[in-house]
Each structure stands twice: as C-alpha cells, then as structure tokens.
Picture 1 (cartoon, one colour):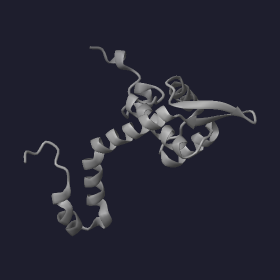
Picture 2 (cartoon, one colour):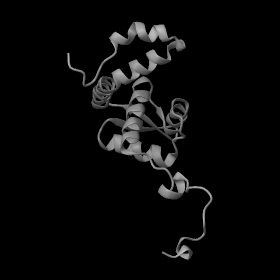
Picture 3 (cartoon, helix red, strand yellow):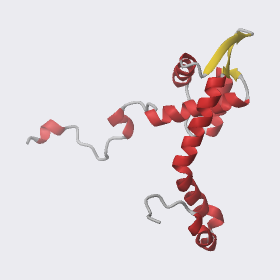
Picture 4 (cartoon, helix red, strand yellow):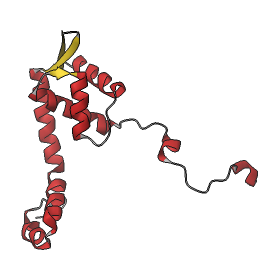
Length: 146
C-alpha cells in the first residue's frame, strides 16, 4: 500500500467531531430530553426560551432551538403537551396524558437506574469507605442469585 494514499499524515487521532460530524442527540438523550421537558412543564407552564434556560441549568450541554422546538412539536403531536399563544409567545403546558406518561417514564427510569445511582452515591458519600461498607448489603445486586 502506498503512503501517498494516506496523506496528509496526522500527528494526532481525528477528533470525535471529525469522525461523526456535529454532535446530534442520541435516541436515549432525546428520550431524556423529552422526559425533562415533561417534568419541567409539570411544575410550570412556560414558553420555549424559559424551557431552554431551565434545561441549560440542569444539563451539561446546551439545548439549542434546533433541538428544543422539534422536540416540543413531537410532544405536542403525541398530545403530551399543548401550546397556546399568550402575548405573542407560545406557552407550553403538560396535558393529563403527558403527566401520566411522565410519571410512568420516571418510574421506569428510576427502576432501571436505582441500583446504579444508589451504588454511585453510596461510594461517593463523603468519601468514607466505612459508609460504603455499612451500606453495601443494601445495594441492588443485578444478576445475583439469592
């Protein structure tokens, strides 16, 4: 094989952005984003910009308009949220169906990740090994036979 075929030569591996392009939300992240939006709207009806600000406060990544508004449209299309105009702004609120879906999704999420969260928090709890040892028997042991 000819070296010329592989030029220009690199001194460092390609970045994630070079390989995969601009980062898109995965299906799991969109699911989490939808759950977070429903959760926020279950506490307060508000407009898109406020939702974007609140999501920015709880997420590490910035949620852009290009991600938020299609997600809101998807939730609205599935009748999980509704939109009405107020003072030239679209205000979003959760529907009864949306509240039911949010509760079921949060319950499933909690069941799925309970052991992971409990283990993580317990191990990180003030860095005390004796605390982790004390609560090790409380941890959910997925796959362990009783």
